[in-house]
Every structure is written in C-alpha cells, then in structure tokens.
Image (tube, rainbow, N blue to C red):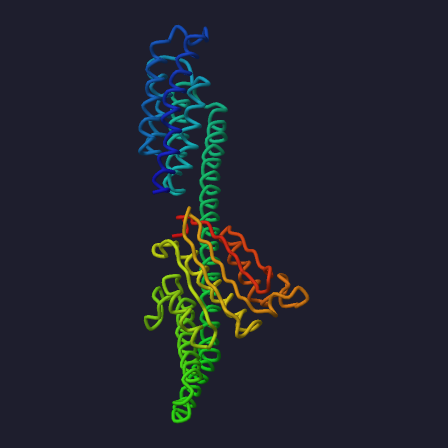
Length: 393
C-alpha cells in the first residue's frame, strides 16, 4: 500500500513537467527575437516535450527519449536550437529516468539523449563543442537522479529497520512480562497455595480426630469448620490469581471472583470463626463495575480481618448502601480496646498495617474516600464511599 502511494507520488513530477516545460518552451519561443519567427515549429517542439513527459509517467526511459527528440524535430523543420527550455526539459527527463528506472535500464536514457543531441548537432551544425557539452550535462543529470533514488531506497530501508527493531523490542518486553508473570505464578502455586492447602488439610484431619470431643462443643466445632472453609476459599483464590498471572481468561477450577454478591458468604465465614457480625444491605449489589465490585469486597474483608486481629469478641456491624451512584461501605465494631484513644491500634496511620495501605490504594484508584478512626463510646469504624463510573465495567 505505502509503496504504491510512493510510486504515484513521484509520478507527479513528469506530469507537472509536461505542463510547466511545455509552456516554458512556448514562452521562450515567443519572447526571444531569434526564435519568434519559428514560433510554430517551436510550438510543435514544445508539444513533443509535453508528450515525452506524459510518456515518462508510465515509461521513464522511453519518455526521456521522446523529450530528447524535440531537438531533431525542430532542426528538421528549420528552427534554431536547442533553446534553454528544451535543454532543461531533456536534462529533467534524463534525471527522472535515473530516479524512476533501474540503474541498468536508465543508462539507455543517457545514451539515447546524448546520441540524439550529438547526431542532430553534427548533421545540422557540424562538429563543435556540443560533442563534449551534451555528454558533460546529461551524464551528471542522470547521476543525480540515480543518487536521489539510492538515498530514497536507503531511507526506506532505515525506516523499515527501525520499525522492525521497535516491533522486536515490544515483543521482547511482552515476552519478559509473560515470563515474569509465569515465574510469579509458579512460586505462588508451588509455595503459598501449597502451604495453605496443606494447613487446610491438616486442620480438617485434626477436626475429624476430635469429632468425638467436639460433639459437646458445637461452637468450637463451627469455628474449625469455618477455618476449613476459609482455607479452601483462600486456595481457590490463589489458584484464580495464578490463572490470571498465566493470562487465562477464566478463573481456575471455576472459583467465583470476589464480589459484593458473595458478601453474605463472606460474613457467614467470619461468623464461623466466632465473631458476631450483622449485615445490612440497601440497594442492589448486582451489575456493579467489576473493579469497584472486587475492591469493595476486599475492603469489607480486610476491615473484618482487622476486627479479628485488634478486637476479638467485639460485635461487628457491616452496612452496604448503593444509592445516588455511590456505594458506601461501613464496618463498625464495639470493641472497647479498639476505640480507646491511647490504643495505638486505633491510629488511622497504623491500623491494620499493610491492610489499611491496601484499602487506601483501592479507594484512591477508584476516586473514592476513606475515613477510619475511633467512635464515641468505644469501638472503631471504617467508612468508605466509592463513586460508580460505568467506564470501569
């Protein structure tokens, strides 16, 4: 496509030259007192020049030969010459042949033009300096044309090479990213996921060994069952993460992605650990943008994990409201320690360590707001507002 466009572009040169140099020949014939008596003959010669450039649009070498023929035509009809316009036209046609045709073929244009001019000059003017002059001007004109063609080809090669190098660089960068993702995926799968899976299996084995004892302790049995479920869920999510790192579009083994639609399951798992949690939902949790949906789920999950770490045994209140294109998440606990002003765990800058940092990063990424801190009367609250933007869908 680009090569065809380039060919059409340089074909404009002979098309323009046909008009410009044909008219220049007429102007010269009319304005020069020596040529004016032969205006009709020189008009025919100008027509030959224009016709030659028209031929050069398709056949550059043949066109250069036709342009050179203006000299024998005008000489045969008794006009003096060659004039300046005709000589310029012959030089331009020869240079264009050197540019547009192959080096070997374009040499024919030089030989033909020089031959036509020398033979014509010899027949009508006798031997003169023209025998030296015409080769001295036509050969450099042809050389300039070939030089321009060679430089243009080199420029194309440089551009093509640069494009290829850019493509290779991008491919190399993509390959490096894929390789690194695969490495991380292997490490997560082989170490973290394996360890969590082993711990979950060991916990299940311990629970089965203690079944007879746990019959009289249903609360403790429920806690162990909840921990087993959390372990299995963690393994599934790790496998899903491994799948994403390996650029697999679907979650591994059909593990459902984190979503507020699964909030009740999350609350049930936390309750199974012995932490009393109440849940209130207002508005629909379906159809939320994926990025917001996942982030909101993780924020609630981390907030409840913080309560487990810093205020075990406290009552937790989870409230999710979807209205006015804003999802508001509120996680409150009534733990006496977590609400004490002197308790370092209540410092918003230190609460939850990396957990709070992760919350802030998720909220900032979604353009929301995060407020954390103690509440009056004891306890702690995490309050998040996330605007709904459909471009995240």
